[in-house]
Image (cartoon, rainbow, N blue to C red; front, side, top):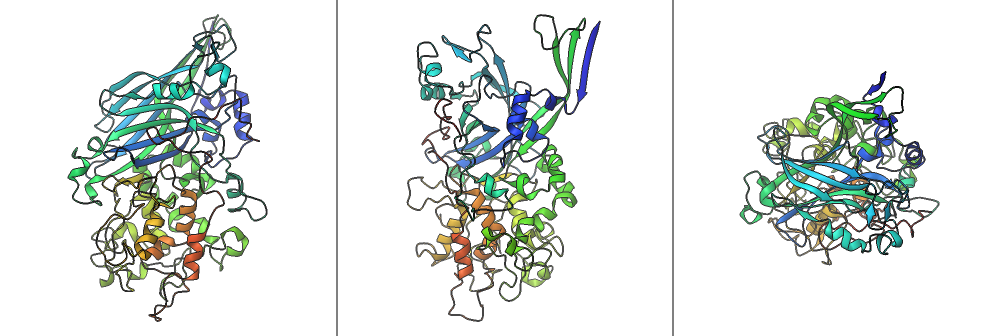
Length: 593
């Protein structure tokens, strides 16, 4: 008699090795952003990076990381991509189309070359040896073509006997990593495998009620010396641009036709059935037990803008957010919208609310009386009193342009900065230009410094591919991304004497794309604290617009710019060429203590 055990939806959580579940539950990370996906690490998106190549400026890199908090010494069953998961990178490049325009789909296969041993690597053979198939769709998922077959995934960096010695692979890990880089039949350069986790943040301090930087002990990178599994693509700009133009054909460095939106996901099939003949165990390979997965593919995780679901979504809706696509976000605006219009973090940067309760944020204070007029504290009016007036005519806040998105209603003060940064991108239109040249009027024309406006989806990392990359060895390169570009555009005499469109270093930094080096936690906290509003001329409260001799670079602005989380860079270096992420930490030398 054959028995079948079927459970829909959550069976895949229950089938995880018990040890792996315990390990992940006992740890804390911003990566494990939602209750359900925390129990399914192989399908958990951790981070997404999208940036123009510093060494090959005609190309864009997309790096999607999965599997949080991998212990390098986590044997004997080391972390690997799941064999029953679709890992996908989605690209939107055309406002005139609905949904994705390009999709890259990775599926992985796992082989035991020597099942007679309990070792992962022995005598030139690998167990849990992983390969992949890469498919691409250029019509929104209607059809896929296979562009890589049997792609190589390097083994985990177990130790010197497993990697370098004759009783192991008799190789070198950097060689193994290099040999895993392949070229797709359609021209993309591809890498998939374990690497150092490039994200850096004091996880413990962040989730200890906002103790960032820590007030009583030293801050510590909670992801230091952990690994992740990465999927990296290096793609010609002409492949990603909607009309297949190369970057030399851009009208200027903020050409709106070169904006792309990128997000990544993981999906599983809805049903898994364990079939066991004659009452035997489905896990016993000798009795004919089988495991069948079937049904529709269900998205269980997604990622784009960093710390979105972790920090801006409330616990009760995090699992729902992971199930949606960015194109569904607007339909759920009543569920998620207020988290951006009135973010919880802003309450701890407001002395009339709970500012005193989070001393680590004392340098960050949201504008409550900017230019003696505008209040951006939660539930206040922000710029909404200007709705429909001649003051916003011809600006992005005009209903005829984007005002229905950016000034949707009263009591939504951050609809003009936090909402577009996460959901539409920011246009090169008034008032989204630097205060340079505005002569005290934030709605006047200023110095352009961003245009990644793509308002046909929700949470995506948006990159204007026409913006030149900032050389990593430049003295102007900064992990502060667009915040530093704004500082240079406002204060540096190379840039602040005119309102011309010109390249300012770090215009290619977060949130115009995301580079590996960008300190996104710091930038996002500064943004909640009002730094973007200040950059466009909505200065902090200690600036008196009636005092024409006073510099708008006031103490509050300086405090915001000097704010630090205590962890400002990755615990190791990055490589100078694709895939840019560093080799994974070795299990025999890392203890994570």
